[in-house]
Length: 185
Image (cartoon, rainbow, N blue to C red; front, side):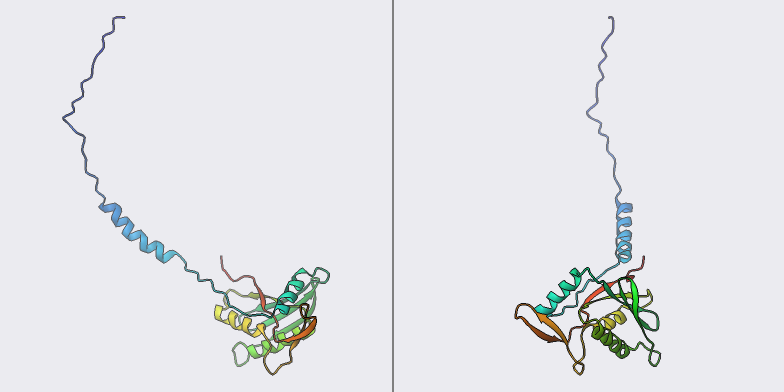
């Protein structure tokens, strides 16, 4: 073992120094932050509050739990008209078309058609809305407003109040709304 041990002497006097230039990194961040902010879509979720009588809330829950006869009421919003389709157990039983009036959406006609549907199906409180992608959001909200309640001059609907054990009168038509096809992908 004739190996000799060599010692490596480190020179502590010399320091490895270098300068890190952060200017390009800062320039990149200053550029990327506004781009990311502009690319982010800002979605504001709002709830349209409605006050419902307790008897109507119970009727809505009973309608949701009803499995014997499934009735669906669909409102299709095309670019220039409304189409109402009512199905019982996936069989179309009623179809109404509301055409435009003076080349504009006919909300009054829509309300009348939905009122007639509600008279035929008084225990149904849910409506499914299928707007085309080109339908503006404010038009969808107007359609929901027309579907929500009967007008003052129209007759009211009867709902049984279990708590008071009697019938009450309400203007509520379709307070439960389900959407389909609102967000484009």
